[in-house]
Image (cartoon, rainbow, N blue to C red; front, side, top):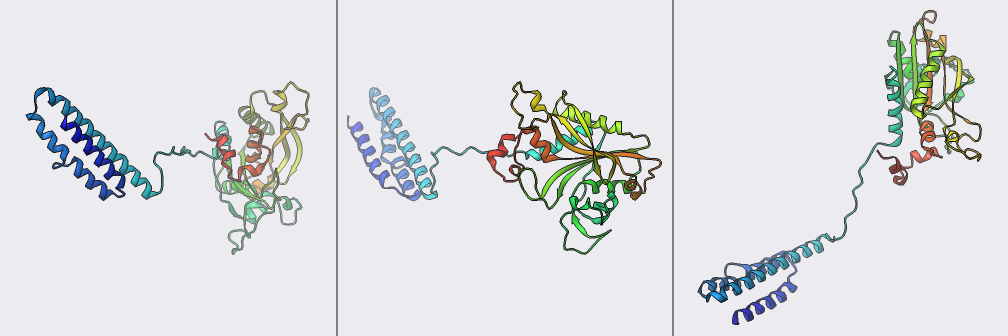
Length: 346
């Protein structure tokens, strides 16, 4: 059949022209030449009505198939040219898009604050830049006191404002002073945030870290109330089987003061006699410091220590996170290694 030979010739000529087409303009000319209204294929379609009935179906089918193949090859060539111009292969498998999440420390900080909110505490954040009065003196840490060396921090080369030189706070306790200067008891507050100390960076120390300070003041608060609050926090955060141990300690802003340990949750979950890497075999883990607010601190905030009493506690967020998630080095939190961080992505 002459029509089939002509169709084969059209296809052969199209393949030759297509191989030489290197631009969108060239492809458009080829499209018009082979699929346009005046193309040879269009003229062949126009002859179909005049053919015998038996030939109409055969020729019509071959013309439609040929037209579809030409259109598909034109589209494929167009995509190839576009990829070559843009310098990328759209057929290459794409990269998986990674969704971000909250940093582990942000999650732990939020969990700690939520636990205390459920116990009736309110959350109040404070400024990271403060003065010597709120960071030291009002907390019963006078200039000449040796304990000040532990809390000494980074001073700013700025004119003194308020009460003393400006500095980066070395604990979140200044938030306690600011709040008590303006509020009247009773109240119960937790204050989270970043703090700064000139510590040598190693596996357990950093010059910047996070703390949560908690304090409550009323007419009838006792040390037993402090123990109850901390026991509820420990059981909520570390598990119902945890126990607390209070050891006498010294803090200038509380009296009496104590260090608080929790029973090692790692030892409790192990049957082996192998020495525990968390508590080093002591069966106890230190988590925070606490005590009854010193009368001098209440007096500095114009709160009558004869009428009111209060307790305070403070914990390092990084330490809590390291214990809960078995993280051996504090520096891992700040190295921005996605391989580490994505393990805790929520």
